[in-house]
Image 1 (tube, rainbow, N blue to C red):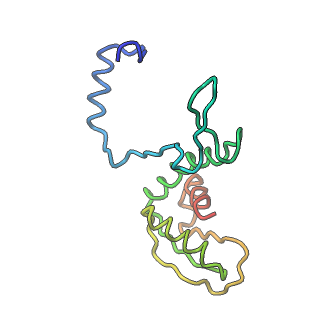
Image 2 (image 1 turned 60 degrees about the vertical axis):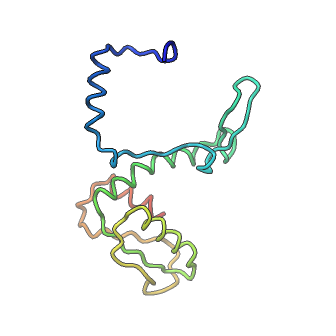
Image 3 (image 1 turned 45 degrees about the vertical axis):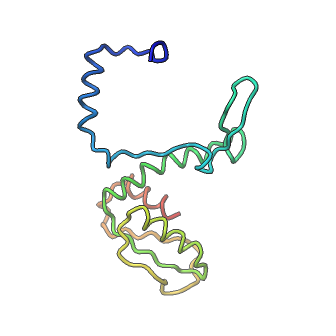
Length: 148
């Protein structure tokens, strides 16, 4: 690697890092890529910088990118908790309901019940906490972010 990597690690430190890395459970590693296939950035070029990635929302618009990485860890907390989710569609819009269900199911969430709500005229998302406040605020907010 020559002159391409600079570090203040001593050789003994690097050996210890290597030994620790062998104990890591790879199934617990979260890997997300920020590249054009994510839909969040587009490839571009600059005469001064060469190949660059720019937000698809526009130059200087980073909110979608921030949410992408923030929500990665929120969803892991919900999965680890194994929260029981019930999803009921209270509108006539089946497209959004189906997309939400598919996204949660493919993410490994514990969906225990789903279907139509008692009425089809709901205008807001309802979140019901059956844990009697046992869920910590972080996890409760995480659930709300996923549903909205």
